[in-house]
Amino acid sequence: MTRKTLVLIATAGSAALLLGAYGFQHIGGLLPCKMCLWQRWPHAAAILIGLVLFAGGPRALAWLGALAAAITGGIGAFHAGVEWGWWPGPASCTGGGLDLGAMGGSDLLSMDAPTGLVLCDEIVWQFLGLSMAGWNFIISLGLVVIWVMAARRA
Image (cartoon, rainbow, N blue to C red; front, side, top):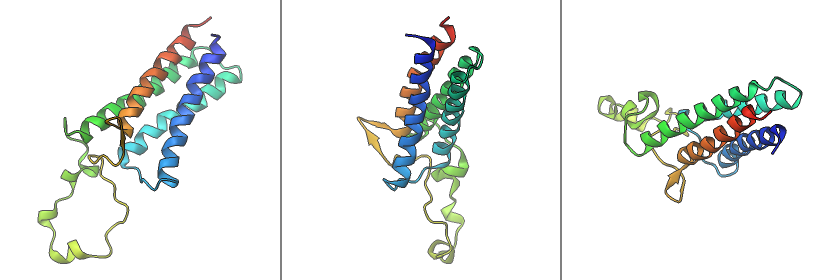
């Protein structure tokens, strides 16, 4: 395969994951948590890197594509571990961040509470035993390999 073909596959992979995430959100009604949103930014960066490479950018940029895929994969692995309870997640988006014991009855029954709150330690969708974060981790590892192959291709 040529370098351009590999870059096309890696760029399309990030685009597909990003479009899938937005599809789950806007069509499927599954709101993302904070860590889900963190995983989207490196995919957007990988897409931009791919576009620059198609426009004739330096081959070394493919290493940045690999880094972007590795970062989103790492966030996905961490997020999956939080969902499975293997380690704690950020207090700002996990069940541990809500101190229900310190709230009074009026606070708990308030209609002013934010709607659509999604916690990072809850699995809202899974397929074959993996959550979206787990799938992002696995697919992103494959994208890292493809980006590295593109970077090494003459």
